[in-house]
Amino acid sequence: MINLFEKLLDQKHTLLADGATGTNLFAMGLQSGDAPELWNLEQPHRVAALYRSFIDAGSDIVLTNTFGGTRYRLKLHKAQHRVAELNTAAVEILKKEIEASGREVVVAGSIGPSGEILAPLGDMQPDEAVEAFAEQALALHRGGADVLWIETMSSLEEVELAVKGAGEAGLPMGHETG
Image (cartoon, rainbow, N blue to C red):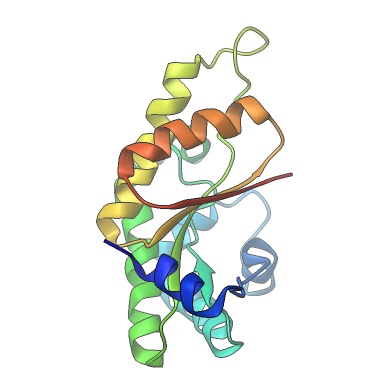
């Protein structure tokens, strides 16, 4: 079965993605040190406005506000138990904005680095990373993401573990390294 990402890519061959989610959220009032993902529940109107601006600008792909949506990044804000809730909320907000626009826009579930250092230099074991990325990917899939977008990772090993974990969701994937 071809999903929307594959359909639009087949039709257009080149898709325009949004950009600078974090930078734009800071311009909207997010403070340094705050978790953007918490805004999916605390400031959904601001997240919706950002998504709408990307849609109105002509983006074919809009990334969810879930870059730091793994349990490890959310732990910094005592929200590690809210992975599913925060990731799903981000997708739902975006889907509503897309529906209101009347356009076909790909929902890309953003998955950023865990923020942890892998063993042997750090404490995180590879299987723990895979589990955390899978947890986030499955939440994004349940919310209705069309594709998973693995982004801004500087460690090839972490990218590989993210791809392995995200693979459990069964969605197409894109990735970029930082």
